[in-house]
Amino acid sequence: MFNLGIDVAKAKLDCALRLPNGKHRNKVVENNHKGFAVLKEWLLKHDAGNPRVCMEATGTYWEAVAEYLVGLGMVVSVINPAQIKAFGASRLVRTKTDKVDAQLIADFSHERQPEPWIAPSPAAQALRAMVLRLEALQAMRLQETNRLDVAREAVRQGIEDHIAWLDKQIKELILAIKRHIDDDPDLHDKRELLDSIPGLGERTIPVLLSYYADTERFDNAKQAVAFAGLDPRQHESGSSVRGKPRMSKIGHSFLRKALYMPAMVAVHRTEWGKRFGQRLTAAGKAPKLIIGAMMRKLVHVAFGVLRSGKIFDPTLHNA
Image (cartoon, rainbow, N blue to C red; front, top):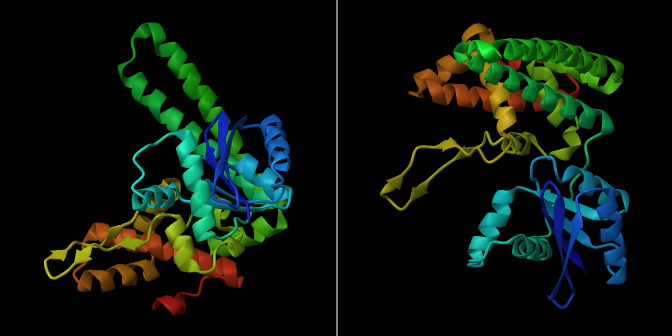
């Protein structure tokens, strides 16, 4: 079995092909369709037309090559970079270069055989692209607003014009996201399911849909929670080390950011959320921990309604 490890960057792909005898062959290609074609020819040259492929989830730079290789019939795994870091530490790897990282990923693929990556539907991919673009535009607007407060007169008009342009783009993109969901029957139905959960609003639902609409990508709700980095991390050892449980944060920070305000609303303004918060408060939990627990609960509930196809049932949550 051939294993192909790919260290992904914005402009290039460092590829390491692990041969059946354990040796490696390396190749650097461009991170575009021209480079993908070169990679395909290079694999055929080594009689490795159908290797097991593994790469890290580095931003969004991995998506195009992953989709291309899956289209060729290859088994592709996309893993958390923390897994490769831990794997390298277990091997006492002291050198970090793109070539070494690619070989390490190939060895990880050979030894661990991670689960295959399931590509989201085209509609979900398009929705995610729009949601991330909206987040970028809103971040730019906040930066420009902060600059406007201290701007000199010579540049003030330019900043104001940019803010006006950003406002127009944000408004148009929000409408485009709504139309995209309305025009896709599957996304439309799933939006209605999520809209039944008290605490989730029109800004959060598209974010959840862009990551969780294809529930088949996760075996259970715990995996969906871990995907967002909302799973608890415990640190205990022997009889003396008793660290407080903390949120792992090994997952998508964008999802955690999107769920913070809905969790606040759910805990303080909804019946089921108030009961949830009261129960944790009675158990001596701190306010910040309660909000984190509600963020995790929202993912559990959202995944449940999407997987079952049934709207939120308050009787299941003592409300």
